[in-house]
Image (cartoon, rainbow, N blue to C red):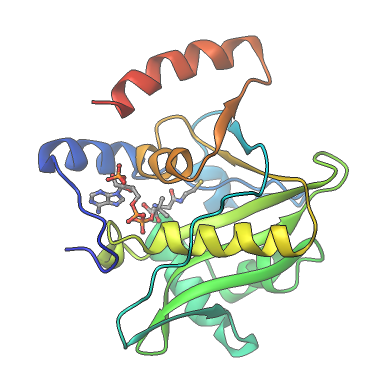
Length: 214
Ligand SMILES: CC(C)(COP(=O)(O)OP(=O)(O)OC[C@H]1O[C@@H](n2cnc3c(N)ncnc32)[C@H](O)[C@@H]1OP(=O)(O)O)[C@@H](O)C(=O)NCCC(=O)NCCS
């Protein structure tokens, strides 16, 4: 089922790819030390993707009545911890949410899709001017497993791209992992393309792209 007219075709393929995505977490890119939960979830070096401009961002698709796309509220730290724990399958607590998101000086905005008032998908707008001057950095994208595959991850990413455009930034970057097929599909469909930072990156993308096209 899709909330947003976004259907999934091959169930077996999806199951395999969801399994591949399992256990892979977003990494700490903000210079803070990783918690043990974060470090335990790291399985490989991150890959960089870039949307080369912020033009032609898709329209926000309407949501069913019980759903809302909005900024996270200050009283939703615990709700974000629950959501991120479920999305990434590693424990987040309130302190980690504060350090990584709500009180992180480089995070400009945390967007959520809420269902019946409870956040079920999130993505954040971060700036990393030293590493990525002029770019918005798409940060901590996750959807509750009960709500994945319904277009909500795409929706929060679109909202962050709009945020970057409104902020006058040139383009958007993100870091993810090469086996995270659900994330790669989401990003490729929204105009992010691979950027090769190290010689081995071309080979890694050459292995993964044919599988994404199946
Ligand atoms: C990546 C993620 C945010 C995508 O959110 P989402 O709401 O499921 O995204 P969408 O519904 O827009 O689907 C995007 C793609 O995810 C895939 N997908 C995600 N969950 C799926 C599921 N349960 N069943 C089938 N497909 C799924 C689909 O293949 C889809 O690709 P398609 O358009 O080619 O069919 C979500 O899968 C997630 O939270 N993953 C765990 C956390 C994570 O890895 N975050 C990204 C870190 S960089």
